[in-house]
Each structure stands twice: as structure tokens, then as C-alpha cells.
Image (cartoon, rainbow, N blue to C red; front, side, top):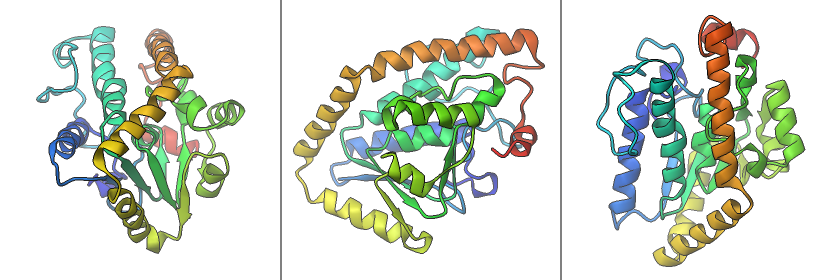
Length: 261
């Protein structure tokens, strides 16, 4: 991800480019392991809700799903179509990429950034990394790819969401959300070392093992749980549209920063 001036906020251009990159990685026999990283000081500050290059209204070449194009629609028809494809739909497909994926996380991993890290099989975090999902401040019950109760214990997930506070890399390791915490200056090398070890394993064995663990998570309710929360997520958007200045509850980049996000 290469928008360091905006903390790698996820505009549509970046998100669809990631989708194309993951397709190429799945199809390329020379690729054994995928490493997802962010340029600059931060992994990702989440969905782009207000940079000069925000492009949520634009159409892009679409391989992501069978929903209609959101860009020429209005209201819930637009928002539900877009988020079904770009957020929940893409993340679910990326999670199923049949090769191991390792997230290399430094600095901020916030809201939509969590989704990108969580679809990866392993997370290596630098000591300065922090994690947060502050969207409850918008009146919304967490990001669209609602993996919270599966990537951390449920009571920890509730505290994480109820407060919107930052979780340090060390705390994330303690609750089992990340695999390793390393010094910032060693992050790239340590991530690539881990990826290299994994790459020595047979491709089919890795693909089947990934499928086996993912199936176990889904048997624990992850897939259906996300479906149910996605409906609550859009109920929150609709409520905000009725009672607040906009579907985000009037929270823009400046307001979110002011609350510590």
C-alpha cells in the first residue's frame, strides 16, 4: 500500500489495485507467500473518509462480485452495493487466497486497516504498532469485516469496541491477535524471514491447511456472524442518515482524530 502521505487510507483506487494484485499472486506459480505491507510510518489508517483523492463515487473495473455498480445509484442502494463488494466481499475472497498471507504492520492499523491485517494468516507487528476500531463513535458496531470475536476473546473484543481505545502491539500479542512483535527497524527482515520459512513448505499442503483452519473458524460461526453484523452495520448507517448530518454520524477525519482515533 503506497499512500504514505495519508497513512495508507484505503481509497477505491488502492483497494481495487490490491484486489488485482491478489489475483495475480494467486495465479503466479512463482509466488509462494504473499506479504502485505504499507509504505511509510503506518500500515493503514482505514477507509478513506476524506482525503483529496477519495473516490468512493467513481466506477472501477470490477471482478469483486456480482453486485451492481454502486456509482450511479443513490442512498442505501449505493452504499450497500459498494460495501458488499469492496469491504465484506473483497475481504472474504482475500481470506480464501490459497497461499499463505503475512501482514507486516507498523504504526496505525485502524478500522479498515484491521480488515486488511485480519484477512492475512499471520501478523508480524512492530513494537510501535497499534490497533483500534473507533467506529462505534459513529454509532456503527465495528467495521464491515466483523472478525473481532474470532481474532480476540469476546470480552476483549467488547472492550476494544466499547472504548475505541488503541491496543498496543504487545497487548495484541497477549490476546493472540498477532503472531510476533519485533523492533521497528527489524520488521521487514523478520517478516520476510518468516515468509521464507513458510515458502519452503509444499504449495498444496499449505493451501489445504489454510482451508482447514478457515473452515474451522467458519464452523465456529465466523461466516454467518459476519453476515448478521453486516446487516446491523447498515442499520446504523440508515439511522445516522435519518438522525445525523450524514451516514457516518457527522464524524470526519478531523473529528475522529480529535477523539484519539
